[in-house]
Length: 404
Ligand code: SF4
Image (cartoon, rainbow, N blue to C red; front, top):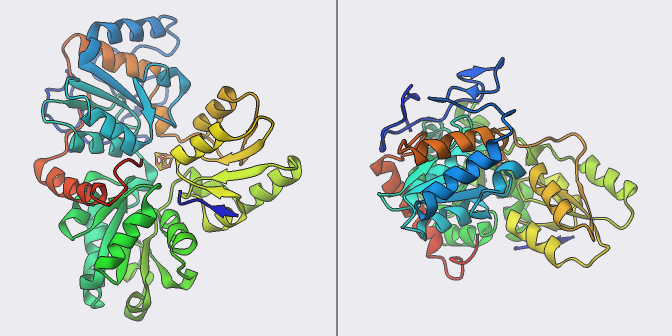
């Protein structure tokens, strides 16, 4: 196998005042299953059945001109991606937004932690808008600040906190990034996790890796040469994480028990099945997949790596791709000369990414065009300060600034 290194408050019934922080809805909260609305939106959310939605989005976007910049994550629906000024992964998108200071309004078609990162990296006059406040991320939700603070106390009691560097994946909330910033830690992406871990192990003997156990384990074992039993799994729902002091003292990598509810569902069986179904197929998966899946795959890498690999692949090549379904479908559509299939037959779209649909985009754009800022995501100043510190440490790594 080729391993490739490859906000608090509730929505108001009136448009939100700029600077008013908004919190993420827990999926299902404030939902109205009998309507197309999904969650409460102040004002008039157009019905999905409105045939004029595309035209309305075009008109509102044109009216806003250069004052608006729309970011579209790779996992978004086609109906939304068609309006994106740039597409990419979360870190690339946040940096694209920061590079456009003339854009007063950044509409982030992605999930909550991405909009937070964009707010952290953009200037104060730029407003970051998330069209649907139910667009969270189950992985980010698996590491809450209070849980991580408790875990740090457990590490301190075991006498290992001083020797531990906290590292968080980009897919985490702003307050977890800030925790890492405050405690001498750093942020990583799926592209640069090894470089970031190399940096961390120059500063400490252990790493607390948040919140994705699979990215942490895959990087530690497949790229850094650790053994599986150098890693322990800290379960925030169990007393002391379910670990003894001796286990914490012996571990090199303390993995947080979190995972992506999309990538974590791919199975080793699916790899076997696709190899039987499509002779000669190459299996290409994201490092958020389980270790057992990665071990059976041919290539592993970030979303950008997956895109580039397919781009460069020869006509006639066959690929089974283990990442979010919207992206895999788009890859298949854009590369009709290659056979591209979704790795798993029992995995569906990322439910929260899919919350951002055309009605919510139209709702956000039309409000902006009328001078109303809705669903602005604002990270408080102290959190922003320390989260930026953790991001900055990553950006200062040699050769890492150009990577996503
Ligand atoms: S695909 Fe996974 S990591 Fe990405 S937003 Fe969805 S749940 Fe979160």
